[in-house]
Length: 244
Image (tube, rainbow, N blue to C red; front, top):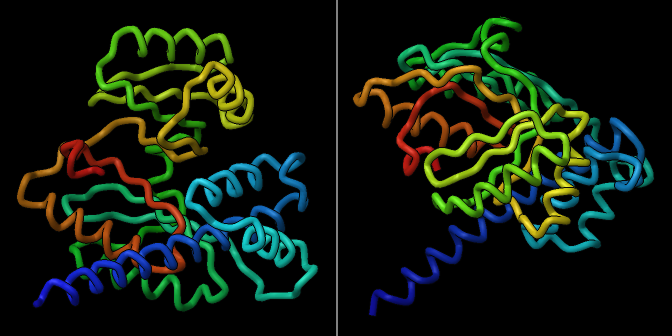
C-alpha cells in the first residue's frame, strides 16, 4: 500500500534532479554563446555544451532557445562566469566555477557551504596554482589491456599528451586547444568517453583522513545542489566509489 507514494517520491526526486541539471546546462550554453559565436561549428565551447545537453536528452528546441538568449536574440538576464577558490575539510583545495545573474547571492551561498563544512573561501590564486587546465576524456576501460592499448594508441596519434590508467578508467589528457581534435579522433576510432571536457586537474591528489571524507562528500553534494555552481574541482584522494 505504501509502494505507490515511494515510487512517486523517487520519480519526483529524479524529475527535480533532471530539472536542476538542465538549468545548469542551459546556463552553460547561454554563456558559451555569449563568449563566442552562436554557431556550434565555429564555437568549440558551445559545441561541447550542446553535446552535453544532447547526452542529457535535452530537446533541440530548448537548446536553440538557450543559444538565442546567449546571442541576445531573445533578451534574457545577464549571466556572468565567476570562479571561487577555497578550502574544504582537512585543508582540501577547491575551485568552484559558477554561472550566475546575481554574484552577491552566489558568493554568500558558496561561503555558507564552505563554512558549514569546516572550510573557508580563499582569495583569487590561493589554490589555482595546484591545478592545471587541460582537456580530459575519460573512458571505462575496466582494466582491459587490449582496450587500454587501443585508447593509448588512438590518443597519442591524435596529439594527446598523456593517458592515465587507474581505477578501471583510462583518462586521456591534452592541451585545451587540442581537445576538439583529440575528441573527434577518438570518436572516429569508435571510442566513446563517459565524460569529456576541459577541466582544472590537480597536480597531485592529497590523502584525506577517513573521518573527514564524509564531511567533504557532504560539502560537494551541498555545492552541487546550488543552481549557480557549474563545476567543482578538488585535490582530495577519495575512494573511487565515493568520488563517483
